[in-house]
Image (cartoon, rainbow over all chains, first blue to last red; front, side, top):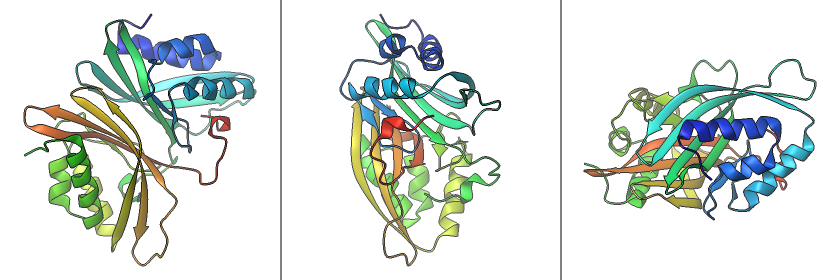
Length: 135
Length: 135
């Protein structure tokens, strides 16, 4: 069962992340070999490898707290793109880690909306002149 | 004038990047306030700020060499997503910098294909266990 809106798919995604709920995480993702999940600083996991990646992350951490800050949104009809900032606290840490920027692509199929791509990457905190940072 | 295929839009994008050709760079991007360009480690530039970002990058560097390695592709009809690795050499450097991973979203409008989103981020070289890297 997919989700009635991209927003509901996104809430399910981040709730599953925070609660380390692999069943819901797997439900959020489309079942397709071209799905892609980029954890920070890594090359993409694709297709069925995505679930194994989340399992490994969930096994490695004791407890997550996560807050999501919307940054930008693109509505392309049956494809919706959200850019968000993720503020993650792990275990007994008292302050969030430096923010992670994520691009999330949701697509509507016959069933509803699912996640097709998640690209997460670090953001340099305190960088006031982004355009000067080169590829 | 847009491009007849996503591949041609991508070739134009990276050729404009390498040649520091701002006119072509601006032609590749859709003209819409929700377009988004994430240079490595930065928050997104959106809409008209994207061109100013590229101008700043082009002004700052003497010479680029760029090679692109396809990683993953998603065909969603009027939206196509490419994930690529960018290998960039700047100025007189003799070896490419550590690779950059980019998600590029192309969308077809009445005119053809243009770029709507570019999210570039560093990849940790020599990381053999991506799934262990936490958000």
